[in-house]
Image (cartoon, rainbow, N blue to C red; front, side, top):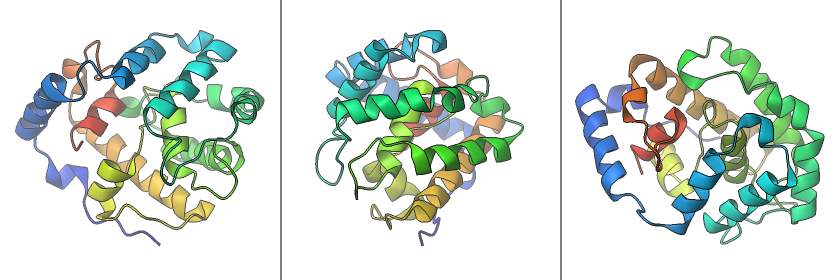
Length: 210
């Protein structure tokens, strides 16, 4: 089982958060195709996300973010799309929650548990965590954070590998959600919002250790 080795509250101060956010805003993957696709996706309203066009944009962006390479393998597009449509109401049940004002994190975690176990976003036998987190971030960007191996998992666990069983992946997701939630409640990330990568608070926090 993965063991959390770092936490955001003790690692970052108000001063170095500001410096890190400013640095990533100026330097992180500027003019990158992934940034362009992300900007398109974040410009879509919540009411318009459960369309084939948005799901295709999400799938395409995941591929641009290397979710179909190395250890990752997306489900076939038709499977991916069908699964999201089937779980539309469950995903939408979280759309009014925000990471910085979240008061019922237990409810959110219960919904995430159900979705992680039931959404078919990756090929059979492949780990779900990274693809799941990034997909849900597209649909719920003000609440849920993207997770990757090289930065997120390396920072929190000093390890990029994890067991593939659902319980382990869920434990990791919940622990990282706790970390993001705690930091979002004590620091005003809204002052750093922009029209590039920093389009929501979960993504701003994600970028401070990228």
